[in-house]
Figure (cartoon, one colour):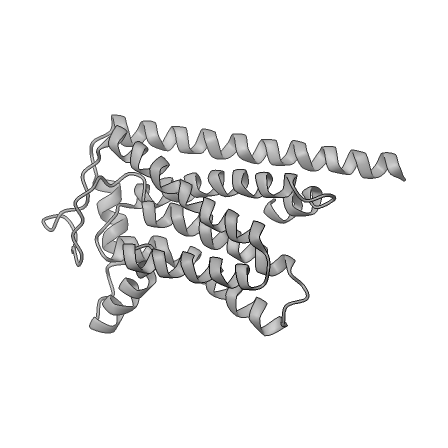
Length: 228
């Protein structure tokens, strides 16, 4: 029985390694395409499809979805989440939520390396203009890392009320899924930007979860299983 458990853990570790390798290769390939091919025909077509349906209420909804990674939105979201875990005497969880902000300097560095121009009004509909570089999408990366880790934490705390876990977890997943469309709809990013941000976010999330799991006795296999 013990040998079977050990074999299962090793199999999970190999699977996780394969997933990480696939993400790295995917992000590297996408980065090369963005760097080498300056033509934005494919990205323009994808943005046009996302922006096909337009209305004032949809403009507001897409902006609300993106709000959580603005300076005030991010501070309020991260601050409130950390304070909640501190009140519940879960200091380690609060600390790791703060550590998710470590994605920001990584994103900034990669943006400077590529220095890709954001969508312009002559190519797509630009609702909100931004000054920094476009690739990868910082909003998407941050959402995957922070809300992905938050969803994992609330799922693991089974002593919490079910409705709380479903509400926080459901909202987190909703934001992760919709943020790529939000950024494209607002004219803030290209399709390849949000895909790059998603892949980078997954890689950072796996790293954060693995680090968090190493400090929990007996928790590492279960956490890795959830990530996979």
